[in-house]
Image (cartoon, rainbow, N blue to C red; front, side, top):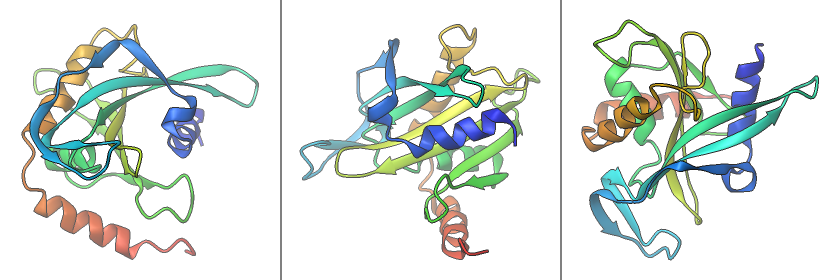
Length: 196
């Protein structure tokens, strides 16, 4: 297994709040979409085809030889569905290449798409890991994005970082009702057998 793949597993295995730092220069605080009131004081509103805000969270991962690397996750907060980034990728590129479960008994996997062309005006290929979670403290949808040279597209120094952020934030606003995605997704989740 390559080290980036192992790091991806680890990054989603730990609580975002415990180990992540917000990238202060890339936080959007203006809500977009259609707000819907909830009874949860931690997320009093969730947003249909939108989000309350987004942030890039940076995690430092220690590898076997004590070297460290940073991974950056684009996290959309207070979304109506924690599946928004998964649904977006499915609607653009079809079924995912791989399901990743950091804990073998997890029902909701991280979905991976490899070698996808995010932008029609360029030939560059990307790898995207889509995730999300819904719990009492938060509801979010997120992505990690790497280019064809395994560069982290959400790092502070990546030249097209804003273009990547715009791709996903605009994509969430134009999602369909998701019926096709949810049919395929739930079939896959329901057929998962951790004992295989």
